[in-house]
Length: 187
Image (cartoon, rainbow, N blue to C red; front, side, top):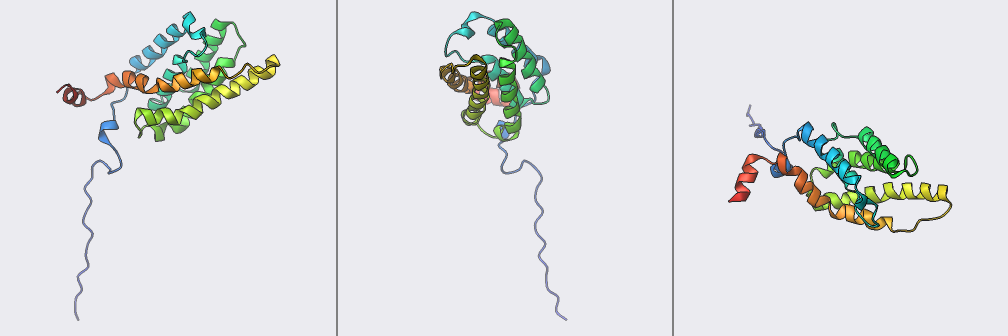
């Protein structure tokens, strides 16, 4: 009786999967840094420049950014509370910003696993419909309550918010970069 050799598949080496880019993996952000940036941007949002037409909403940008990169620290409750704080500060319709911020945070959390694999410009393009639809829902409700459509000026603000996503991401990722990455980029 002749014996046939059975080929045993070679063992795979354990390590980083081929579809993960190690340079995109960052250390987790420190809680003090996350909450410090949210509080700092909230304080900056209390300044009158936010009321100018077309100014980007930096607070929703930072909240959405942390919902994507640290969804266990910043979430829907954070977005809702800071939205209510801005509604109280603006003395406008209570819940307008809260609704918009909560919808944006929900969209960011829903996409967070996908977005972490992309670079910052691709993340911005993925977040464009999230920012736009969240603001559109809010504007429709406000128009229904006011009895007239306010126009599309708010879309400029959404566009600028998306345009500064890469800059905000670069700044907010600075403390999380690996020491070797910072050291190699300095050479």
